[in-house]
Image 1 (cartoon, rainbow, N blue to C red):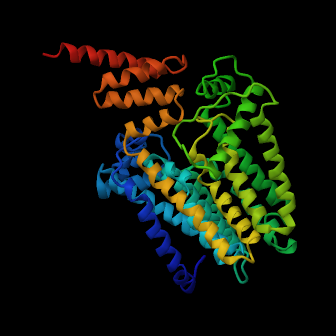
Image 2 (cartoon, rainbow, N blue to C red):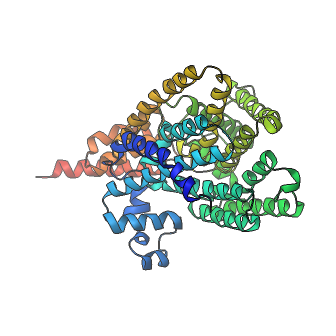
Length: 467
């Protein structure tokens, strides 16, 4: 077992604190309506209505997520309030496991407490928390954390290591049923062994065939994901589709795409440090050359990342481990292979564990002799972050508030404009929808905008002819 009874009781204080904080910060999500993909993934998904429907699998979704929706549907029907409660529950559990992980990495209670709280309250988490269809992010992190903690436990004295390794792999497979980003867990296992386990006592790194097998499974899993997703069929159009969301209509090239991806990485890292103006859609200018400041900054960031890995490998094992954690969970969502979105707050949910822990380690190290100042600095970070989170929750109240915010943050995003127009049409407000849809059709790749615009004119015609 990962926890004995005495250890479980020791977790009572963080459980209470994290639960209370979560209730205070996310209470204003409970009245939020269905938004974004909720209609497709939940409201109109027959698979969540019963076990028999789930087995029939008429909607090809993520099975673990659908099972949790089945529980919600049984208890609450299609009332989103109950679904939001479970969203918060998973986030609290993840925050608690961050606390446990930090302690397993032999770090101080200060770092464990502040890391778990920072993870809980960080505004970039709101997209996963407030949108029910993004529960896959919470689930994959929960089972990934359990998998890693189980793997670590296998190296404790008196443990049957092989049994723990097998169980950790099983938990990793469960995580993959939530989201395939868990395929990189072997990298994290190897990082723990390298940083914390004596060479003669290692498991994965001690035997080359095991390391090669784990690497092969990870590569094969990633390749299968790419094959099934259809990305490999026509990479050019995948790239063009991603770039068109940034209003780039010229012929897409690999160089242009790579420069844009590098800029997107810096853009997302910046959101971790300064999480204001968060939105579901982001647009920014495409770099015109390799000398673009954003591209240069991205390259320097990559160099800094690997330099930090080399520096921390023997000096700061926890930082080394967390750098690998962040890189492992970022790799599948990094858009090296094009995804639906170039940038998204939800991509940061699992990697942000590394960010919060490293931040707290650095604060603890730099202010080790100034305990009072250390706590003051943490409070000065946490208070504004909490206010930003509460405010960001309100963005997800309903489709109109969601897409109005996206248009405010990215006023030239054709997809934010067309989705806002569609939200108004759902409310029967064609007059309000028109100006947004007229702007949206300027992006010739956005065929939905033209359809919505036709619908708006037809709605107006019917309203004018109504007696």
